[in-house]
Length: 335
Image 1 (tube, one colour):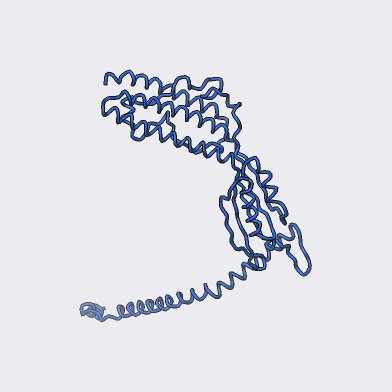
Image 2 (cartoon, rainbow, N blue to C red):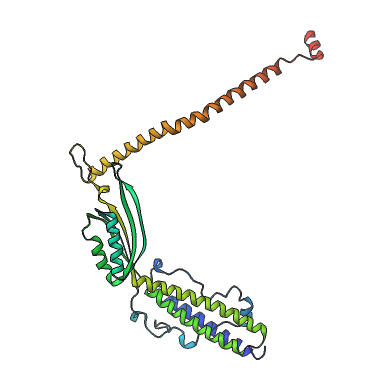
């Protein structure tokens, strides 16, 4: 243990440097919106591993090299200013379109995505109903296309449609989070390399086991950070487009005796019609289902109640007419 003491002291001082680096990185990107922050991950510099209690006592914590500590002027750990890093923006779009042929349009969107170098994430076709009760197809499809071709894809999706009901395009800048992950990855890899050097010099079995457990922990953190970085890279490279495809029969204009109401009047009349439809459906269901069920259950319960009440009254009457005891009869005669 005496030969390992210098490494323990070195690791302790370097671990403090890692803590300072982590705090500086957080200050650099504190201006990022809260909703854009990536999912929380274990902090390799502030939290000890689950099996690392003994390691912390032995001092085998992987430090980051001093030349990777973030500078106070706002530069990242790699020496590059955050403002000079290429922006990483995740762009997504959400549309609802009305078409004449739902199945044909969904296939056209799928072919378009593959032609642009993307792919289909999910596709769902189902049946819907018009106001007149006619069954019509409806669908939901989600595709991914290269971000630089997003506008072209949206134009093709909206081409020759009956109506575009809704269209929403959103963007999320994750540059700060990505740069932070790059810095974490560099420090984690540096810590892993130093632990490997300590492993080579450790001779005692207990020391080897402790260092090995630390290595397992840091390798796990490295994989987590790489996975988050890959997610950001793929999300920024391929934009997601969600399209709700509606049959034109579903949105046919309302006509009442040749009159075609529009705007607020149309919506009010349509809501009134829906109310009467729902009310009639309720009455039909109540008469054909709810009422027979109540009768089936209520009549037996009522008969049981009548029988129990009659039995209770009979038992109470018998109790009141029981013969008096002799002592009570003498007492009554004296009176």
